[in-house]
Image 1 (cartoon, rainbow, N blue to C red):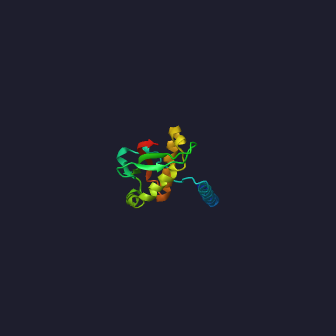
Image 2 (cartoon, rainbow, N blue to C red):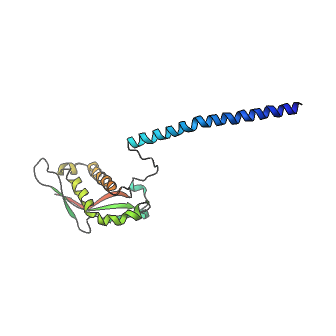
Length: 175
Protein backbone atom coordinates (compact mmCIF):
# COMPACT_ATOMS: atom_id res chain seq x y z
CA UNK A 1 0.00 0.00 0.00
CA UNK A 2 2.87 2.34 0.82
CA UNK A 3 4.47 1.77 -2.57
CA UNK A 4 1.21 2.46 -4.38
CA UNK A 5 0.61 5.68 -2.41
CA UNK A 6 4.17 6.80 -3.10
CA UNK A 7 3.70 6.18 -6.84
CA UNK A 8 0.51 8.29 -6.83
CA UNK A 9 2.34 11.11 -5.00
CA UNK A 10 5.25 11.02 -7.47
CA UNK A 11 2.84 11.02 -10.41
CA UNK A 12 0.99 14.03 -8.95
CA UNK A 13 4.29 15.92 -8.54
CA UNK A 14 5.28 15.13 -12.12
CA UNK A 15 1.93 16.46 -13.39
CA UNK A 16 2.29 19.63 -11.28
CA UNK A 17 5.85 20.09 -12.59
CA UNK A 18 4.68 19.75 -16.22
CA UNK A 19 1.83 22.21 -15.67
CA UNK A 20 4.09 24.78 -13.98
CA UNK A 21 6.70 24.39 -16.76
CA UNK A 22 3.97 25.04 -19.34
CA UNK A 23 2.80 28.13 -17.45
CA UNK A 24 6.36 29.45 -17.27
CA UNK A 25 6.85 28.88 -21.00
CA UNK A 26 3.55 30.62 -21.81
CA UNK A 27 4.54 33.69 -19.80
CA UNK A 28 8.26 34.00 -20.59
CA UNK A 29 8.36 33.32 -24.34
CA UNK A 30 6.05 36.20 -25.38
CA UNK A 31 7.91 38.55 -23.05
CA UNK A 32 11.25 37.51 -24.54
CA UNK A 33 9.90 38.07 -28.06
CA UNK A 34 8.65 41.52 -27.12
CA UNK A 35 12.04 42.35 -25.60
CA UNK A 36 13.83 41.25 -28.77
CA UNK A 37 11.49 43.38 -30.91
CA UNK A 38 12.09 46.39 -28.67
CA UNK A 39 15.87 45.93 -28.87
CA UNK A 40 15.68 45.66 -32.67
CA UNK A 41 13.62 48.86 -32.88
CA UNK A 42 16.02 50.77 -30.64
CA UNK A 43 19.02 49.54 -32.65
CA UNK A 44 17.43 50.58 -35.92
CA UNK A 45 16.47 53.96 -34.45
CA UNK A 46 20.08 54.69 -33.54
CA UNK A 47 21.40 52.90 -36.63
CA UNK A 48 23.38 50.19 -34.88
CA UNK A 49 24.47 47.12 -36.79
CA UNK A 50 22.81 44.00 -35.47
CA UNK A 51 25.34 41.77 -37.18
CA UNK A 52 28.46 41.30 -35.13
CA UNK A 53 31.87 40.59 -36.55
CA UNK A 54 31.70 43.01 -39.47
CA UNK A 55 35.22 44.10 -40.35
CA UNK A 56 35.68 47.84 -40.82
CA UNK A 57 39.37 48.08 -40.12
CA UNK A 58 41.43 47.21 -43.21
CA UNK A 59 44.43 46.38 -41.01
CA UNK A 60 42.61 43.33 -39.61
CA UNK A 61 42.06 41.78 -43.05
CA UNK A 62 44.80 39.45 -44.29
CA UNK A 63 46.61 40.85 -47.33
CA UNK A 64 45.63 37.86 -49.47
CA UNK A 65 41.95 38.77 -48.91
CA UNK A 66 42.31 42.28 -50.34
CA UNK A 67 42.12 43.70 -53.82
CA UNK A 68 43.07 47.26 -54.81
CA UNK A 69 41.23 49.12 -57.58
CA UNK A 70 42.65 52.39 -58.92
CA UNK A 71 39.94 54.99 -59.45
CA UNK A 72 42.21 57.44 -61.24
CA UNK A 73 43.94 54.89 -63.43
CA UNK A 74 47.71 55.00 -63.67
CA UNK A 75 47.80 58.81 -63.79
CA UNK A 76 47.47 61.29 -60.97
CA UNK A 77 44.35 63.42 -60.96
CA UNK A 78 43.86 67.01 -59.82
CA UNK A 79 41.10 67.83 -57.33
CA UNK A 80 40.09 71.34 -56.30
CA UNK A 81 40.17 72.34 -52.63
CA UNK A 82 37.97 74.91 -50.91
CA UNK A 83 39.35 78.44 -51.07
CA UNK A 84 41.39 79.19 -48.02
CA UNK A 85 41.94 82.34 -45.98
CA UNK A 86 44.37 83.64 -48.61
CA UNK A 87 41.60 83.65 -51.26
CA UNK A 88 43.67 81.63 -53.73
CA UNK A 89 42.69 78.43 -55.47
CA UNK A 90 44.45 75.36 -54.14
CA UNK A 91 44.57 71.82 -55.49
CA UNK A 92 45.52 68.32 -54.45
CA UNK A 93 47.14 66.10 -57.07
CA UNK A 94 46.93 62.41 -56.20
CA UNK A 95 46.14 58.87 -57.25
CA UNK A 96 43.04 57.48 -55.56
CA UNK A 97 42.39 53.78 -55.03
CA UNK A 98 40.09 51.66 -52.91
CA UNK A 99 40.88 48.48 -51.04
CA UNK A 100 38.28 45.73 -51.37
CA UNK A 101 37.68 42.76 -49.09
CA UNK A 102 37.60 39.71 -51.38
CA UNK A 103 36.14 37.56 -48.58
CA UNK A 104 33.04 39.77 -48.29
CA UNK A 105 29.82 38.21 -49.54
CA UNK A 106 29.14 41.18 -51.87
CA UNK A 107 32.58 41.22 -53.50
CA UNK A 108 31.84 38.99 -56.53
CA UNK A 109 28.55 40.72 -57.25
CA UNK A 110 29.58 44.34 -56.75
CA UNK A 111 33.21 44.54 -57.90
CA UNK A 112 32.23 44.65 -61.60
CA UNK A 113 29.94 47.59 -60.80
CA UNK A 114 32.92 49.73 -59.77
CA UNK A 115 33.95 50.26 -63.39
CA UNK A 116 30.42 51.42 -64.29
CA UNK A 117 30.32 53.82 -61.36
CA UNK A 118 33.89 55.11 -61.58
CA UNK A 119 32.74 58.64 -62.42
CA UNK A 120 30.43 58.66 -59.40
CA UNK A 121 33.30 57.51 -57.19
CA UNK A 122 35.54 60.27 -58.57
CA UNK A 123 32.74 62.75 -57.89
CA UNK A 124 32.61 61.58 -54.26
CA UNK A 125 36.35 62.17 -53.99
CA UNK A 126 36.09 65.58 -55.63
CA UNK A 127 33.14 66.72 -53.49
CA UNK A 128 34.88 65.59 -50.32
CA UNK A 129 38.05 67.49 -51.16
CA UNK A 130 35.95 70.60 -51.90
CA UNK A 131 34.93 70.70 -48.21
CA UNK A 132 38.50 71.23 -47.01
CA UNK A 133 40.92 74.08 -47.57
CA UNK A 134 44.67 73.85 -48.08
CA UNK A 135 45.62 74.84 -44.52
CA UNK A 136 43.16 72.44 -42.88
CA UNK A 137 44.21 69.56 -45.13
CA UNK A 138 47.88 70.06 -44.36
CA UNK A 139 47.34 70.65 -40.63
CA UNK A 140 47.30 67.04 -39.42
CA UNK A 141 47.10 63.38 -40.32
CA UNK A 142 43.75 63.16 -38.48
CA UNK A 143 42.15 65.45 -41.05
CA UNK A 144 43.42 63.29 -43.91
CA UNK A 145 42.10 60.21 -42.11
CA UNK A 146 38.75 61.96 -41.67
CA UNK A 147 38.67 62.66 -45.42
CA UNK A 148 39.36 59.01 -46.21
CA UNK A 149 36.64 57.91 -43.78
CA UNK A 150 34.09 60.31 -45.29
CA UNK A 151 34.87 59.08 -48.79
CA UNK A 152 34.70 55.45 -47.71
CA UNK A 153 31.35 55.95 -46.00
CA UNK A 154 29.85 57.60 -49.08
CA UNK A 155 31.21 54.87 -51.36
CA UNK A 156 29.80 52.17 -49.09
CA UNK A 157 26.45 53.95 -49.16
CA UNK A 158 26.60 54.10 -52.96
CA UNK A 159 27.07 50.34 -53.21
CA UNK A 160 24.96 49.56 -50.13
CA UNK A 161 27.74 47.28 -48.95
CA UNK A 162 30.91 47.34 -46.90
CA UNK A 163 33.06 45.30 -49.27
CA UNK A 164 35.14 48.47 -49.69
CA UNK A 165 37.32 48.75 -46.61
CA UNK A 166 39.68 51.66 -47.30
CA UNK A 167 40.33 54.66 -49.54
CA UNK A 168 43.99 55.20 -50.39
CA UNK A 169 45.98 58.16 -51.74
CA UNK A 170 49.40 57.88 -53.34
CA UNK A 171 51.79 60.29 -55.03
CA UNK A 172 49.97 63.15 -53.30
CA UNK A 173 51.01 66.77 -53.82
CA UNK A 174 49.30 69.89 -52.52
CA UNK A 175 49.40 73.20 -54.37
